[in-house]
Length: 222
Image (cartoon, rainbow, N blue to C red):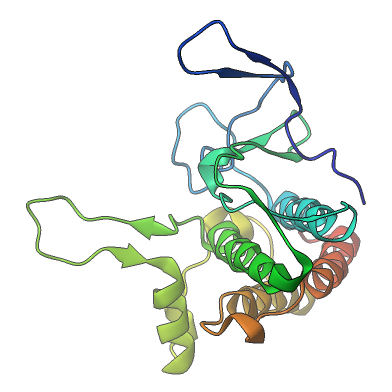
């Protein structure tokens, strides 16, 4: 586990009225948002194994901030548009504008990042936006992915939780893969529990994602 999944800051330019941060040169294959749900023309969608791997690497980064640094760091800005992918679809965190250093007594605040990991898992699973606001002229409410999934689970309407077609297209949905998808969804729901103290610790999230990733790598039908 390391902190290499974050875009490195190499300097600051103070010659302007507002200081400009200078980051390392990085060849990106698009953002995570570009690569899900066929949202952006010209970008290849992500296969299932890569989605699980992305979730695992993101959890590694959050765990690094929590367990390997002298002081706790909350990223605070995890979202598909702020996550770059390299040529191997390994995620790189950007946009630390909402990050903050917290004390050990405030360590539970890092479960806000756990919530964000849960939202990203749901987005990886469904290919849908975490929040989709309706056009101004329409009276319908904004669509929140996590609320939709929780409502479907509570009312036992699991078939209404639409998987991103890329996840299942062209391959048989084996018992093994169905378990991976179910475990992925259950972890996301635990991470997005309303009560902060009921959410799993980032170390537990990392271990469970590692198990799902290993299963996906061993599954020839993924």
